[in-house]
Image (cartoon, rainbow, N blue to C red; front, side, top):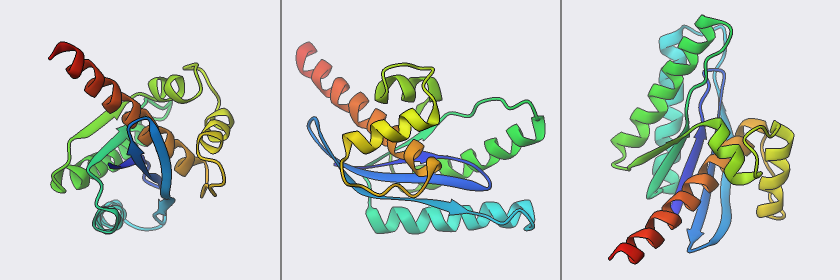
Length: 165
């Protein structure tokens, strides 16, 4: 199963694609979508949407996961982050996928073992879980961590459904 994870942002949205076969995870691709701060908001959101659509058509994931928004000190930043996150959710949903949503704390706990992990610890654990990969940056590392969290969640749900059935 191919899964894609997103760490949304208006300036930079990280993305990571993994393949999940039971408990085995492997790296497919990762990167970052950047928009120019000088562009109008609507244009930045359109660039983000078009880039996401291209990614989804290229990798054809069967599932997606997005990091939930957190509240910044600056309300304007929070609103812009929410708008970018909405575009990510829309693009994934329009592709016909069910979209998982995970808090940053949940992702850190799933990948590192503690919800208070630093960004560098997440990056290090993603690198360790998928040896030899080249991660495009911190946002891509976070997106891969979101995809890994989603893969674990789906595997647990499948296991539970077998127990209940």
